[in-house]
Amino acid sequence: MKKAFTLIELAIVLIIIGLLIGGSVSIYSILTKRAKVKESENIIKENTEIVKNFVSLRKKLPDNNEFDEIAKTKEDIWGKKLSYKYAPNLTDKNSICYENSTPLEIKICKNSSCSDVEETIKNVAFLILSSGENLNNQTDLSNNTIKIYLPGVKVDDNKSDTDNPSPYDDIVRWVKLDELKNITDCEEEKIHILNKEIPYGYEGESYKAKIYAEGGLKNTDGSGNYKWCYEGKLPAGLNADPDYHSNDCLNSLDFWKNADYFQIKGTPSESGNFKITVFVADKNNNIDKHSFALTVNPASSSGSSGGSGGGGSGGGGPSGPPWGIIFPWWKK
Image 1 (cartoon, helix red, strand yellow):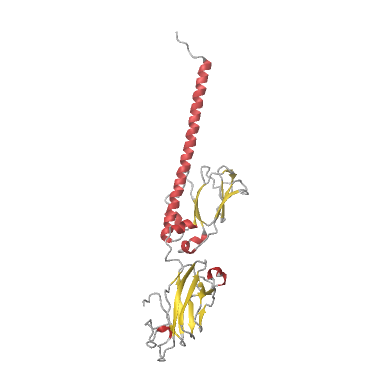
Image 2 (spheres, one colour):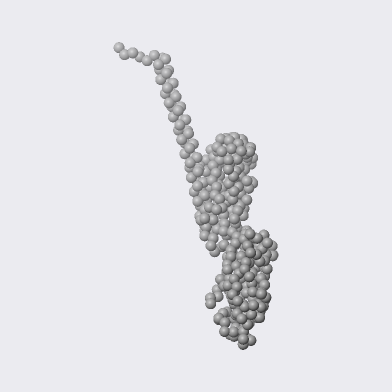
């Protein structure tokens, strides 16, 4: 005769089954949550790469309207629109190339008051944010200092969304300016001196040469597009305009003088070979420099050298362009 289960034994079995089912549901819920978080992270990562591709082609960040146009997925896995925050000085043409910093920074906070900061990240170019599973964007994006909290910190900085302090679960990804510079071809947009050489002159005769630059961020205050400085010795009788000379231009940047171009002019009273190095800087202090050889020939014995800058037929000097300025396209 088979022995039947008692009511107590059946109750114990049912309890065990219930615990197993409850545990399975809990594990399934955790795995589902993790999968959704991962999916939102992938959506943000994909849009981050799209923005980076935009930058590599346009050399600027997209503004909000442009981001909406290029974003592949505008919502996170929970159906809430992603937030996009960008440095305001990086949306102008070629701004990735000539800007060296941004006002945007991120603080990683360890407590709700952010009095305990784990890390501060400066020169952030942009960030993309999902409000997470709780559908509450807890990050205040209205300022240039963005506070991001460690997971679980009970906080709600963004009062414009649901004002409900809860464990922080926003998902955020950011990119710094340096990373964008590394993927952007800025060679043509960098400030650079156009001239590769300047004309020769003759002792006792009028001389003029202009040195031009382009690229970078030009000054807009009317004082001149760029700042200039030079090192080296000019022949007696010649002056520089703007006239700021230094033995160490790189360490005297605050004193450089503004002008659209750099000019050497006057009447040399000595002959010989001279060398100067001309420096130029844009509004953001991006710098280029170039060294020039300046030859002043002895006074012409025939008395007619054909004018300034070595352009004449007399004096037995080397041939050159018939003016005192060498333009970038001039090839000797």
